[in-house]
Image 1 (cartoon, rainbow, N blue to C red):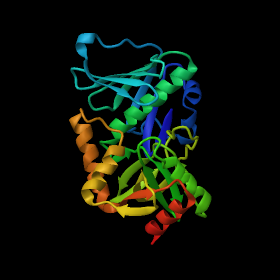
Image 2: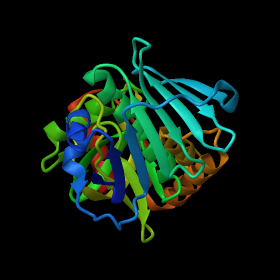
Image 3: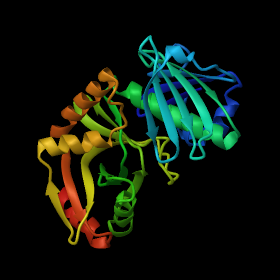
Image 4: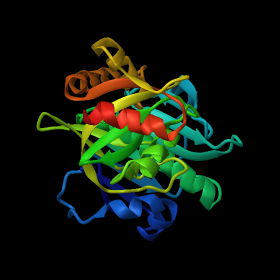
Length: 292
C-alpha cells in the first residue's frame, strides 16, 4: 500500500495483505495514493507476521526513551542500522522494528491485541518517517497548527503548556481559521520556501488532513501574566525549533541533517515567543503581531 505523507511516498508491504493496514492505521486512509510499483518511495516498510530479535551480541543499547505513551528502546546494530522495540504504557511490547543503515529498508513485526498492534505500527511509522525525512529536507515537529489567510501558524511548547488551547482560541475568536494538525505536522523546504503539511499523527485530536500550506510562523508558547509577543533572535529561534523536532542525537547523520534543515528554515520563517494567558485576547494579540 502506498501513502503520500508530506509529499513523500511511503510504502508498506504487509504479509497479511493490505486490508489489515486500514484497521491498524485508520489515520493513514486519507493519505492513500496510487503510485505504481515503479515509483520510488522515500521509505519502505515490510510488515511481517513474525520476526526474531537480533542476537543480543549484535546490538548495543543507545537509549530507553519515555515517549509519554510508553517506552521505546533504541539499539544500534553492527551494520549501522537500528533495532527498535516499542512498548505501551503497561510495558507490553507492541512492535519490533529493524532498520537498515540508510533507513530506507525497514522490517517490522507487531505483537498483542489489535489496539496494541495499532499503537505499535503508528509509533514505528513516526520513527521511520522522522529518520528518513532528515535526508529529504523534511522534519516532523511537535506542534499544533492553525491556518489563517492562507498561511500556517505552528505553536510549539512542552506538553501541557497550552498549544492546543492557543489554537482553540484562534478557532473560536479569529474568523476564517481551521485546524491543520494538533500534534505532529510535517515541515519541508521546497524550492527554497517553507511548507507545512498535515500528517497521519495528531495526538488525541482526530485531525488527519492531507493538505499543504505555506508556513508563516513558529511560535513558542510561554505562560505569562500578560499577552505579548517577543520575536526570537536566530540563536534562540534555532534552539526552539530544533527542540520541537523528532530526531535522534546519537545518530550523527540524522541529527546533523536535522540541524541543517532547521538552520535553513530560520531566515524564512517568523520565529517568536507568545507570552500568554489561556484567553481569547491572546489569540487576537498574536494575530495582530503576525499579520501586522
